Length: 545
Image (cartoon, rainbow, N blue to C red; front, side):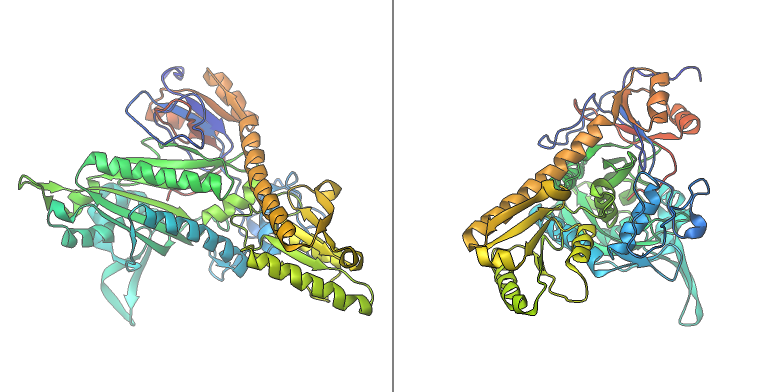
């Protein structure tokens, strides 16, 4: 094979979750630039994969000793000590999710589901704005459907959950529990589409998916997860390509504007393309341990599924043609992305736009004669903020001390905390603390309780926190990217836990060689100037969606 060639393509190396390669250019695609990919020489990026998934004590890496305080109530392992344990501690202590009775499954608790609902609310509106309508397809799919598209069955076969018995009897045909819906959607498209007048068809469904993963990690990789999956059918390849890129733009905007995560959009390598797709585009995000996470995908399916299922239409000239299709998805994995991008040793740190609670009010009193006045002021502040459309929680419980409440709500990632005590009531002011600025630096005294002043101040600070989290994540990502011009430089960058970016013109065999020799995989590539392609190194913790 000889030396690897690093000249026609731009490549990116980093710690991450999954890999991609295809045409890309030398620097990042900025948030306000459009995702446009055209045929050209590929650029690539390389990175390590997400940390080893831990589902139980028995699965914990042998080379990482438990922290002495591990297991204590409310204790969160420091990120620098063990990132996996830190992640698991946050999920448990912040009451985001719990393990299900079947290995690899999880129970999403109310607080975790509320974050998913915020993701749903934004994406559902955008999906409808772009002309799509919501539907629902059955979760049981005849096994023969999966077999119709050869690469699809080959790609998904190891992950399939298959039902062979129903009603106490062996089924005439095995049923697959939905791993994705391209096959069953095509089954109906074949019946719904007759003429060019029936096109385009643009639908979306919010559903659960089952994939029999051997290595699992809550939110990141589980046997069952929640997602939205869009499916469209078009008359031409150009329309399908435009649709695939348009939905990547929606995902990219969500990541930046709502989740405050600076993702990198691009195209997957042939080896990493979705089973049955012509092209796969993804958004990749750098987590707090410098590993990459594939956070959303959009596939141009070409005519692979339409040919397998005979999904045709009569064009304007009376000729029968196969439709061109796309599919695209974002899942509950994005909850994990938010945790690992913004969280710190104190716990969660949630961007205000997706936080279930944006402001928590903690009333403080010592004497009984102070209680009524403090609580009355707290209820008044709560009403002002709720009227202003701010998601607020008043913690008036008396079972815990104010100090305990401060730590608890910080761990839950609430962006702002309001403290009201007897002196504040007397002065008509209150104290506000920012979650993203720890300690005294993030605390401001003497904020007026006047409704107009308080509302404006709180909204302004929430906007500041949203911007600050994005800026911090962007700075962290950029500081961990190394430009490389040779294979030796690539390997050095990976060994330092960095992402590498540089020219790349490797074959499938050379891509495999990089993975074998360094643990890295190509994450993405594209032809546009200022886009990064990443290659991932390390244990894989993400799946293609």
